[in-house]
Image 1 (cartoon, rainbow, N blue to C red):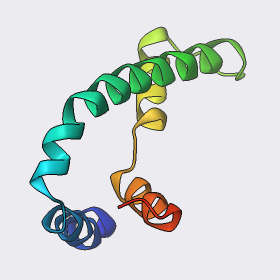
Image 2 (tube, one colour):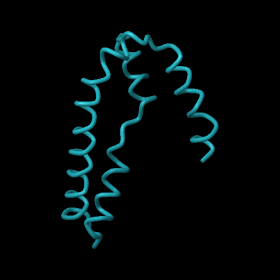
Image 3 (cartoon, rainbow, N blue to C red):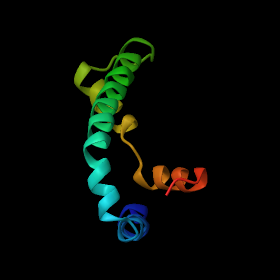
Length: 88
């Protein structure tokens, strides 16, 4: 919990303050179209993998929760990856 309440907010806030509104406005709809279904497909695939491959006898609801936790995107990691790739 220390990471969530102490370290993560300043990292996200710092990146948000350096964003250009023009770039955010132009990329919002394509990002939502790509990220939304991508997370849903990732969660569904992880749930199917958990249900049929792992040796646990979990219900579908628990498998979907597990898949949604593992398929969530990490905004700080994405920003760090884009900076190392040279994208601004």
